[in-house]
Image (cartoon, rainbow, N blue to C red; front, side, top):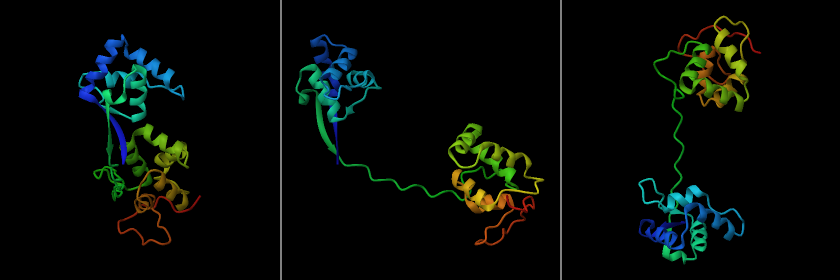
Length: 201
């Protein structure tokens, strides 16, 4: 269970207390910093969204934030907020990866160059660069795979291809098929695999 503080009457008592005390959202935000033992207070954005009566207004906050607002206004928290207990949302299991890795099925994967191009279509150049930066294979290596794999005599090892599949959330058989490689524990591809990569790094 988790607790949340919901505004009373859509925040009208909050707005009335602000008007009666001559406060603005900015002054309330500053005052919450003064009354907060940790001296952090509440952001102006949160105070504004809780005090608003517009469609974008926020209707709830944490009980700690509600307590700081009430103390800043000199009002009992019950007059401004109702504290409710809510059950936590059950964890949603991660969706099973798509057999194609989320790639466009209309794009034929005949080589590693085709696979890199499909990943760029899925994630964009920035996405590919970010994945390469966070992953274990440099971007220049991926670019070289894309531009030179069709006629390459020396290609990536199965270990490098496995890393690429993990980093880019792609099925390993798809990556191996695109590179013309077969892992020791897998059967050869049933499709005609291109003979572009014969040796290991």
